[in-house]
Length: 190
Image 1 (cartoon, helix red, strand yellow):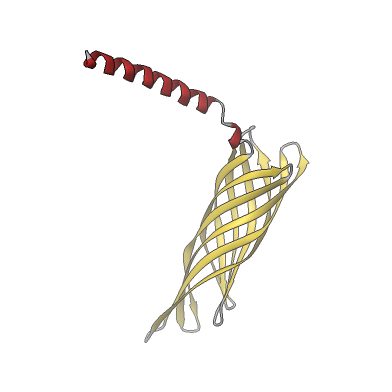
Image 2 (cartoon, helix red, strand yellow):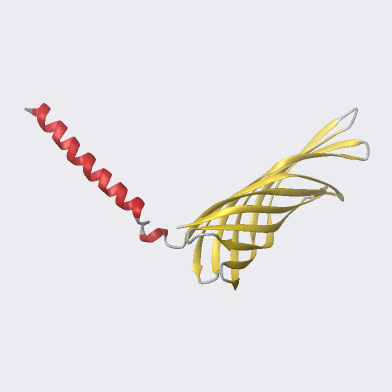
């Protein structure tokens, strides 16, 4: 008798779960209103104590609209490593950053928005210097100001394309590093 009740209860439970899941996917929950996620790819230009080089970069982000025209955005930026010669030595720099920005958006035309951002970035930078006779490395973590601007174009009610320029900056006693990123990406608004 127990064997016949178990499959029937499993069938009812499975049907209820499937119905709930389909309903949730068909209409996002109220708490998802104003949420967005996205990713971007582009070029990053590192400069260290006056020397500079470029590499590819990316960023992943999620945000929430706080008021019309204003959002808070949290993101992760894994900046690719770059190597360049510096006075007979080779400098290699690798960095990643986690940021929290206030993003303002201003409508220019139907579907076209200008973006401005300012926030804080917690970054870790690892730099190594090698010469024919020695090798040394330094790692620094810093939280500092981050800013940028860009534009967004609404593709559909949920999808938008964006292009942005952003600057990150790190300093310690022996080194001054900057990264300027130019990215193009997509965002999905729930």
